[in-house]
Amino acid sequence: MVLERSSSQTASTDAAFSLTMSNPEKIPNDFPASIRVAECVPVDLLRVFYGGIVTGGIAGVVVEAALYPIDTIKTRLQAVHGEGKIILKGLYSGLAGNLAGVLLASSLFVGVYEPTKQKLLETFPENFGALAPLIAGVIGGAVSSILRVPTEVVKQRMQTCQFASASDCVRVILAKEGIKGLYTGYGSFLLRDLPFDAIQFCLYEQLRLGYKLAAKRDLNDAENAIIGAFAGAITGAVSTPLDVIKTRLMVQGSANQYNGICDCALTIMREEGKHTLWKGIGPRVLWIGIGGSIFFGVLEKTKQLFEQGSQKSTNSERD
Image (cartoon, one colour):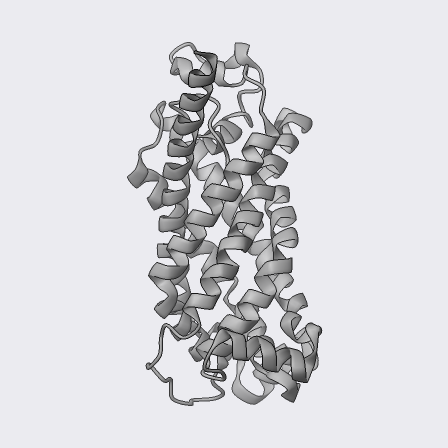
């Protein structure tokens, strides 16, 4: 994700502080020196991109591997019609194949998000700096959806026990539905994930900014994790109805029970009640809350280690 511009300050914190500190003369004298001089250092966008690919991929894989069973339960709750029973066997169905997709998609998302955010922060007037992570989240989500949607389709069909392996799943989808089958529910995915990514990352950045301004120091690993958990849980809760619609569209296969997003929502409410749109909210909030804690915690720590390694390499070359 973001790379640090000083060894004691993560780049995402740098980006957040640039929302209010683009004019150095306005920074209070009692702020740490590392904060007051950070804005004087230009951002290497290519380096930020490479760092985002590495750190985003690591964070995404760690979260997916650790919390996959909760995601499976959530998917099965949302996919079942009416008061059908939930199967609790095979909670790791599709994990191996999904990790490869998550690695690539998470790397691409963070790799696009971070340099885009940094560039927007340089471009926007100070008063509009808070829009940078919001817009960057939308752009990162749109680009990474090229990989995230097929990964999600295969994962959710595996989670609902439709196939024995990811390779069989892809083969059958291509044979019966064509390449467009791998992008089933693409519109609903964007409708859910673009606002989700924008809100979650913007909320995370702003919470970190506010906390750091109040504490007048760098955040530790536990504080990053707690803020990430809060941002993830809130965003996950409010986006649950969109997630239910996306799940139903993605797992329907060639049956085409629903004819698009609106038809899916109306059919669910008519046949099963409005409360069905909130199915799986418990596991979803738990999954994304814990996931946000792990993701942002691992992300910030990995960025720190990545930057330290880069600085050592740079110093060695100079010597």
